[in-house]
Amino acid sequence: MKNKFKGDVHLKQKLFIVLLIVFSLFLTGCGNEKKNNAPVGNGTSTGKSLVLYFSATGTTEKIAKRIADLSNSDIVEIVPKEKYKSEDLNYNQDCRANREQNDSQARPAIQNSIDIQSYDVIYLGYPIWWGTNPKIILTLLDSYDFTGKMIVPFCTSGSTDIHNSVEDLRSHYPNYQFLDGKRFSTSDSDNEIKEFLIPMEEVIDTMKVTINEKEYFVSLADNETTKSLISMLPLELSMSDLNGNEKYANLDQSLPTNEYSPNLIEAGDVMLFGDNCLVIFYQSFDTSYRYTRIGHIDHLDDLGSQSIKAIFEK
Image 1 (cartoon, rainbow, N blue to C red):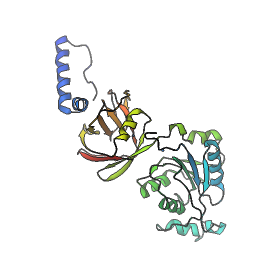
Image 2 (cartoon, rainbow, N blue to C red):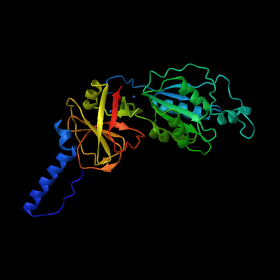
Image 3 (spheres, helix red, strand yellow):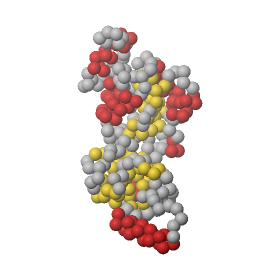
Image 4 (cartoon, one colour):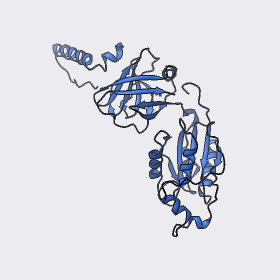
């Protein structure tokens, strides 16, 4: 999609090149065909955040309370029905924590009921046990519907980073939206915690898209384009491949536009080309084209070269 013709050439050569470009756009369909034929979008966001944490020794609780303070979030502890005693956490023996972490089916019971429906953003905190999250976190995620919530993990540990635990959560719950998260220690400053927080004014609604029977979530941009698109849902589209990096389909009606030149397209970007061509990019590349941003899909698979069926819905 870049202009490959540079330099000062003779006028006739320039005219010939222009004709070639026009003809190639006509053939590809991305330029000519697109022009011819996204807890903001629909007001369902609550603008509220919740710090939800499990803490067996009190270390994670200290970080959770600071996050709640600095983000003006509500806070709820995940309370195990059977409290963990010090001997349950003696990792050098055959302790309860060891047995649970080694049992893929273990789901320790939770004592308290938790309301998550009132919140757009959920900061989910836990200690790292055996390199990942404690099994009681799986109990939580099995027990409540986190669809459409922005889940922001945080952890405490001696040295183990949060990455593996987040990947484990994404593997268990592929339809939930987990951000990358962060590991904290009690010595971390308030500024370090503030950098981790999600500004609520930037929290936006999400839209579900099912591509070839796999579900993803689009974090929607806050603009008139996404509001108009949301009003059209549900929407089922057959999307064609172009250039091995995007899928596109022309909508039946035009949408408002606010075009800009992103310079870099990132895999997962969802854009509007012109005023009616919806595009899902599955590869990253530089571009000189102009688009209106719809949103972004985290962890989008390589969609391959075939056409896809995409179902968009709230």
